[in-house]
Amino acid sequence: MLNNFDKISEDIDLFLENCDSLLILGIGNDIRGDDGLGPYIINQLSLLKESILNNPDPANFKNNLNQNEPNNLDKNEDFFDNVCDINTGNIPLDDGLNSYICELNVDVNESLKKRLNKTFLIDGGSVPENFTGLIKKSNPSHIIIVDASLMNKEAGEINIVNKDNIVDISISTHSMSLAYLIKYLELENEFEILFIGIEPKIMDLSFELSDIVKETSDLLVKLLFSKILNI
Image (cartoon, rainbow, N blue to C red; front, side):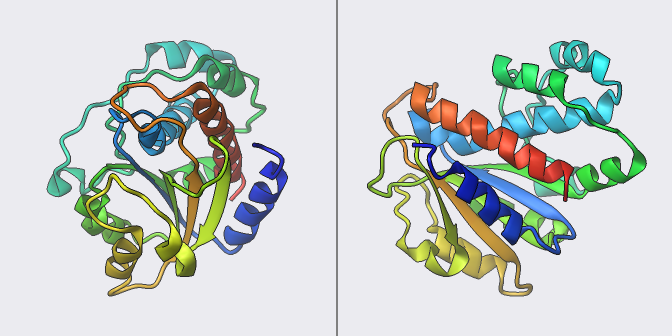
């Protein structure tokens, strides 16, 4: 499952070269099992980001995490005029990621805060087209889209696809295809776009990810957060 993780990391590094600002869009339906991995990953990244911005002392990360609760926000574009992140989840930080943030040796300086504030995290749910206006307004140089995708691979396997090949990805739960979503986003500006798909195991009615997909999702959260810290 994770034999290609080093390659995934290298591909993301190559994609993020010359990145000025990054937007990560998680897509999926969080009541359909593994289809909720996109929103889950955004939720966890948001908590990690907030923990560093709100409490720059690494010794207090854990206390800060225990006190923070994710915001449930109305998806009204006007309301988000000055908001960097949209995280509609109510999942606390995973225990493994809690340990990860506590062990990070991070110099929380103004440069890091600036990089974090130029990283936008959006939970697009199963209707990411609702957020196209906000994405255009954020005007990132690079966009990473994370979603469950049916690739005929082993459950939990990660695959990276560039925007020119996204038309070949099968995603059954969303009202707009990714290819059309990207075409719509680029009517005015052309973005650097990378798609990260994870093969789901279960897509039935469930509020939880399967164990194998959750393991992969948590590894991807750590990987993406490390890239955010070093952009």
